[in-house]
Image (cartoon, rainbow, N blue to C red; front, side):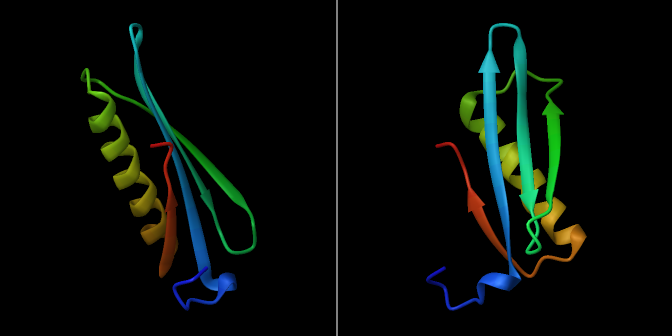
Length: 79
């Protein structure tokens, strides 16, 4: 990574938000430095726009990393 942060200390958060006629949900994959993957799925109880679902899933992904002890997070979204 070009941020000057050593690669071994970087956590990766991958997100994917989805809005369809049948509902909306989102997925988060948190990859810790040891390359272990933690997957989480969200289902919204409100009808979000595409941007709202992407925003919510980014917040959840960053919070997952923070709670797990991440100091440096690289966020990868589908937008």
